[in-house]
Amino acid sequence: MVVDAGDTTGTYEVVGSGAGRRVETAVRRGVVEVSEVTRNGTVVRTDRFTANRVPALVEQPVPREDGSGKAG
Image (cartoon, rainbow, N blue to C red; front, top):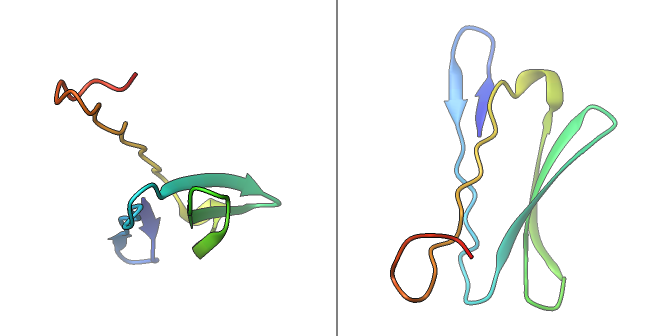
């Protein structure tokens, strides 16, 4: 995620750090919310940014277990 900080931009990377965790994104009421979520849906942590300060949000597919690198 790239965030406009006025005179510069900052890049933030959010990764599902534990086994089976995933990252979910949502845009609600002018806020971009990125959450790390466990298998059973419990939110571990959440980062929030004002939507007009987020010029780019890039989601990368999860590599397949067969090693092909292509998401299923």
